[in-house]
Length: 297
Image 1 (cartoon, rainbow, N blue to C red):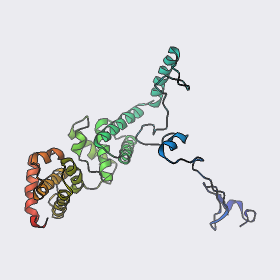
Image 2: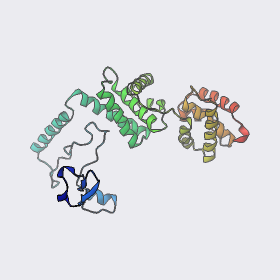
Image 3: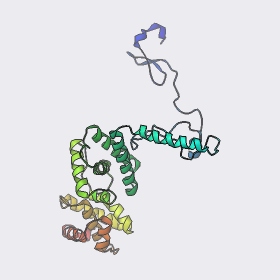
Image 4: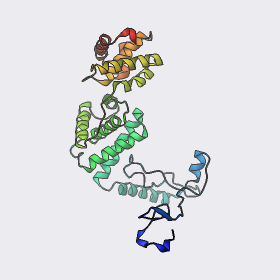
């Protein structure tokens, strides 16, 4: 199709440089824009060395990682040490830069909260993708003015726990209590509030999701993990886990499975890994033992 033969208002230029006749969808001109780098790299180190752009945008930082920082090493472009006068000037510039990056209370709130999310995520081994989700949840809560009058630490912890629930990461509330700087009751209250106000779509916690991690920490073989998962699945179908702690339920299944596999661990060992009481393990274990066919496991 000749561009001169059609109405110019019917022609649309795409982001890739193609000229399209909108009514028919025909490509009039094809001049594709290559958005990739002009250089080639064959490993990560070479790619980092040749790249001339900054880090990708991330919601885990209050400024989304888009601002730069003044280097603390006090050296010029040639690597030479700065004079005392210039070092003093750099210190003042760093101070002003930090003030500018967090100009208002909302920015300072966000910066502190996201640093807490990062700290707790590192302590619990939470994946980077889940940290992004947690940061997004906290940002939404801040935008909708849900943080006012509440503990920043509690709301940050609640956001991280909600993100784990959303993404199917097996972490209990008690896991975060161990690394948080607030009490469990305050975190639970913040979690109920934030999930209700933001209408977060949260999946029920499956006790079976905790089995692999607990078995790994106890040094149990694959056979125990399979049996424990079957115990959880069978008793869940019977509705036995309704209203009970998922971690305690998983711990009891592992204890029962370890006995059946001659890989026994004590109730105290299993309870410590699951962060529940020995009484919880004992009670759930008795219920599960009466509910399943032990010979079929």
